[in-house]
Length: 75
Image (cartoon, rainbow, N blue to C red; front, side):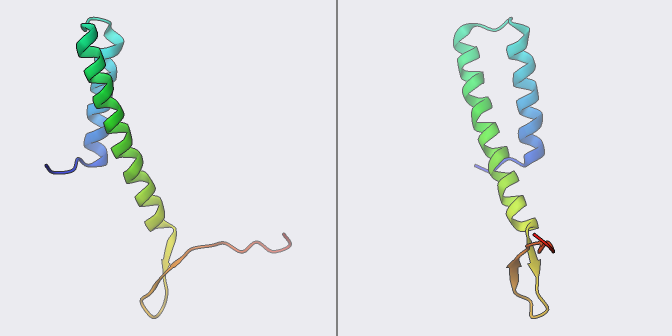
């Protein structure tokens, strides 16, 4: 099974939220939709964490990646 993109996960999550908010969904279906929504949230959260990790790295002159830190003066 192909992993969903961040954008696809958000779109599907928005759709599920609208269905649940409508109140016109049987309880069993609502539980299944809620479970699916939690999986989509986890997928999106994992992707954001991965993206943050990648963005917080800086490419050194020798081609190695290094964690990016900002050194503040006077702190």
